View (cartoon, rainbow, N blue to C red):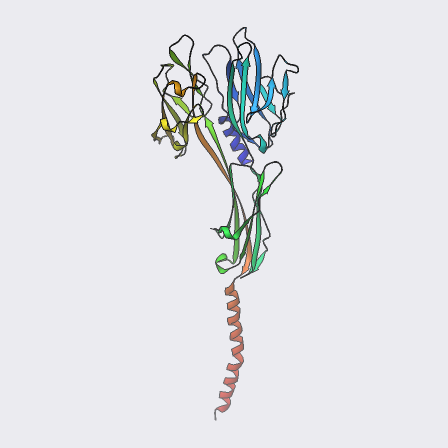
Amino acid sequence: MWCSTHLSAVLLLAQKVTMLSGVTGLRLTQLGVPSLVRFGEPTWLNCSYALDRGERLYSIKWYKDNVEIYSHIPGEVPATKAFQHPGVDIDLGRSTVSDLFLRSTDAMSDGRYRCEVSQEVSFTTERAKKDLLVYDIPDSDPVVVGLHSAYRTNDLVNATCYFGPLKGTSCSLSWYINGTKVKKELESLMDRVHDDGRVTLVRSLVFSVQPRHVDHKGKLRLRCRGQIGVTYQLNSEEIRVRARTNSSRLHVIRGTEMGGPQIAGLYSSYRKHDGLVATCRTRESLAGHRDNLTWFVNDRNASDWTSLYPAVELDSIHVQDSELQLRVPLTPGNFQRNELRLRCGMMRGERFTRVAEVSAHVMHHRFSAQSSRSASRCTTLPVAVVLLVTLTRWQP
């Protein structure tokens, strides 16, 4: 449960919400999709919008990986529909126009969720998307089976370690003998994929007991270590640069900050063909995260337009600031559908480790040698006695 508690705190920061302001007409005011959901748990998806007075909603739709999963069209009967799709279990009874309730999640719930809102007459459509990752971590340590309580030198050890079921972006299971990592050729991989999409890692270890495997107490100690990595992306607000009707300037529409990187240095408007300069900034408690900052222009990596600033360490609070600058020309070729969309992303990762340790007693080869030496001393005793008696009788 310790890992679930930790990730639930991260979950609050990992929720991306995009707010558009300063625009008339239809506005997608909020998109709420959790970045992380524990396997089997329910979750909410939110898509809020606003219309000017006198305007009417035509439809609100949800998509998962470009497949429609929900629609609300007031002019149709029934107005609300949910479509079956793997990993999507919508409860229409608890859902509303703006909020979708998923009763449960599984491995198939992973994916990109997109909300689209359209208004009547003009059929103007606003859309936003966010990735959701389902993870699962076993509540118990790895389980080791097959190890006997005692061995002798050259005996065969055949042990198996099980860890799962689990789900993460990276998983590993490793064997150690007396603290030394085992070579891969001694292991056999037999992972089990469950019907629900989770995996149980299985590693068998087969080797012949040698003196180097035994510690000074005559113990053979095995350790099975399981590791699960969960990597996901936190995004900044999405910036939109648009040309307004009857205006020669390009106007900047900002979003709402939700725990991701911060964007600074923007003006409220620009002239066409100007150069837009913005800085993506993050504050980290651990070093080495600055290379994980990435600018995106129209959802494409914009590394050719970026410059990395050296990290600034703040010793007083044991953190560092990292910055990545973007310089993008506001030329027509860089716009899509009359707008330029900017955002900054940062990769975050959590790694969890579970360990199982077992041991067995080993009759070390030195004990056998010692017994042989004792036996040799016993067999020579009668010879010495006979010799002593013979010498005694020889004396006059």
